[in-house]
Amino acid sequence: MTFEIDVLILFAQTDNTPQNGEWVTQFKKFLDVMLNQVLGEKLNIQLKSETDNMIAPRLDNVAVTVPVLSDNFIRSGQCLDNLEAFIRESEKQNSPYNRIFKVFKTALGWSEQPPRIRELIGYEMYQIDNDTGEVREYSDYFSSEAERQYWMKMVDLAYDIYDTLLALRGQEKPEVKKMYGRKIIYLAETGHDLTVQRNIIKRELQRLGFMVLPAKTLPLEYREFERIVRQNLEEADLSIHLIGSAYGEIPEGSDRSTADLQNQLAAEKSARVGKTNFPRLIWISPLLTNVSERQRAFIDTLKRDIALQEGAEILQTPLEDFKNIIREELTVKAEQPAAEFSGGKSIYLVHDKMDREEVLPVIETLEKKGFRVLTPDFESDLMKVRNRHISNLRTFDVAIVYKGKVNDQWVRMKVLDLLKAPGLGRSKPIKGKAVLTRTGASVNLEAFKNHNIRILETDPASAPEMVLKILNEFEIA
Image (cartoon, rainbow, N blue to C red; front, side, top):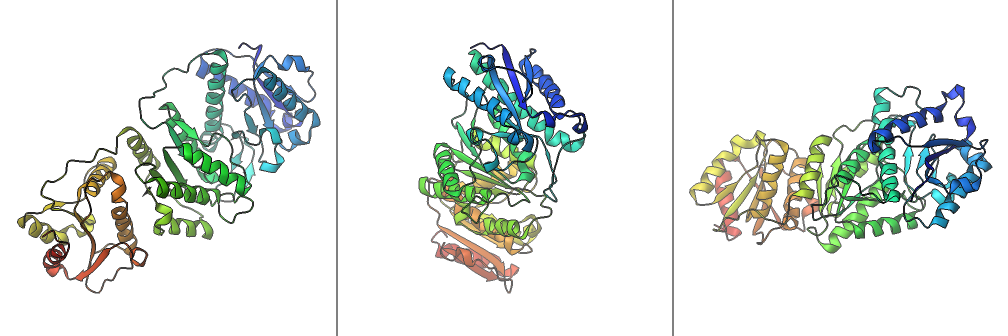
């Protein structure tokens, strides 16, 4: 299909006055430059306010339209009529592609938006103060904050328009890789403080050739929200959840945030279909600032509640490390277990670097008895450390978590890893799990009391003997 106008920007005239820096004119200029860079050609981009004359027949020669949504746009009957006219023309042409890209100049709630475009993905071109949640328009388009938010959204918008224009022209998008088995990723919606990080991950996944869901804005009425999320999750092969400082929006009819609900629904699918059939990655920002009590409670529950962690690997690492882990999860076949020790006597002694000296006598005793002792990697980069840990979780016969100088939270995270081990591609049963702690340094593992984990107390000098005793009870000695 060919069109006279490539991009038509619809806007309210009061949003483009000298007093506000001719916002729409600036937006058009930036979008023009960005699309020129992406497509490698000059496009015909035109502006249309409610005062401009453009009759309906002309609208059938428009490829895509960009309504600049604001309070002024919503109050303008003519702006809404122009948008509706384009929608009707698109329907006449029976185009299967999304040809409307809504841009938010100011914040608008779900119910305030034109009903016909509520479900479409939007591009928020305003600034949100992460500390106060205050919404402001940009006055400096080249500030560091604008680079992170305004320009990232502009890149998103340009690439999405690019995809549609190529499809309308019948051209294939170049350099899209489709070499991996998994095709569809559910990338959960986040609080406003992580929208930039989510967009970065979304773009990288799309460049690798994966489809990313949700493809539409999630509704803010709970029953419809739940229906759409469940439907998207059923299509997905893996889900990714980003947790930050903001609790996020709460759908009408619910008392929990969208991030909380999406995680719960994904955990339910993982429990139903099996961890290996629907793995999940949960990233908790290591830079949590001004966290509300409700969000802190959600994060604490997420770290502690086994049901919410179903099928999930929880990481609190720098974002770049997390992105590397995503790439590894999607491009390396986790179903291929590492080579197993034929003797059936592999012991994974899980401990922290600060307790290394205390566990050395245990390691030496076990090796003298003919056991293969698996230990964590403390020296390599994050990816190698993680790979070693996962390999150990796939191959151990008995796992013992050693609690020396570490706190209860560290122990709970390691115990959760042991509980997730069956979903990592193991091909043999686990013979036993235990936590070994110093005498008097009790550990609270009440949440795991139904998971056959033995709690042992001893002093460091008696630890080797205690370990041999428990291995005998596990019938592995």
